[in-house]
Image (cartoon, rainbow, N blue to C red; front, side, top):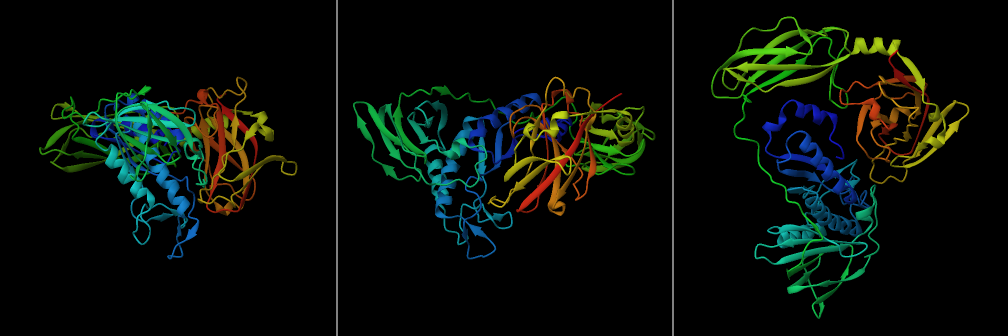
Length: 541
């Protein structure tokens, strides 16, 4: 998770804030990305008023070691080599500590028991198939033993290529954890790394107290102490010095105030609304952040839940869509629901709206429901009448940046009059296959202010291998990162076909788009080729 998806924003617009005690996310980001991730989550939390909720990473892990390099006795599964096991042992405490410094209150590593994914190639478990422990189990045990009751004071600046974090124990003593940065710390796309160099770096530390040293696995290590200084050698594996006193963090940790959701609110949150779409509504898109109404009118079911111990009666009100048969008074028994069929329609020639349901039950306002809705009929009309302006520089292969999990080549194909993207996934060990080359807009002449969408032509071979295709509208120019919106694209075929991608999501501001990524995810390795031509931006007349 780098930027919360538009689906999450829609969910919080429905008042989720007061229904959760803990905000949790999953992350498999590289260690160097974790501070940015923490800042992004904090910004999101402030935006939606949940910055005081505890932040938990309920699933995190590493892909740094790549696919298992050895064959298990269960032949359909690959397993870690010993060097790969050491990489995971290195990654676990580094990730835990870095995420804590980024504001995470609790962290759960994925996963203890033996578990394989990606057709058996990715070995996740901290236990082997015979249930013996990998080195990471000892690393986590030692981390908990030394730091579980400790408070993070902040980061220490120990020197180039070094990382250090200072903790205060309950007895007032301090513990320093430190390590030498490895590619595991510095690479953004770090799958398939090697554990081939300890990366020793020396430094000294002024100290007071009774220091005791431990390696990653909890084994005591001898310390070189002389005239109030510790002469230390950092390696890529974290080490610990406990029993210190009087140290100050160079970058103090700002502890967040945390609290659960309020026990009381000034509205009735036991009345909860749900809708089920019916006639003329299309199924959700990949992003699940809006629904489409194929014609002007359609049908849906409003379900009113009463999650309290008393019977409640009240009225509901609607906005955004016209409701032809709105109910007058609804009654709902305790812990039951009432279902009401509704006929809805767009009240004017608008292309998108937010269908909102509110209510007053037993004299109290209720929680609300907000569902973004797009009129397919009106969008199609606007697209047909809109003007199309070509993105001229997209026909220059040099204007595209390579961005794929395999080896990508970009060229101009004279025969097809198109830009050709060829990606070789043969050496992608972790079976993560994706190709999303990047085109940075030439501003100001290519500004998408007011744009309705993008239209282009494409084809691919072998098209049968592709199971997902997206256009990513990105708000920054940086490669592979930045706030983006993932918009569905109909899968390519082996022959040329046109594709139209509309900015239907209400959160997309075309004026903020700085680059686009157009690509796909194949289901297997080998070589994937696809061509794109005639990319145009659609504007209103």
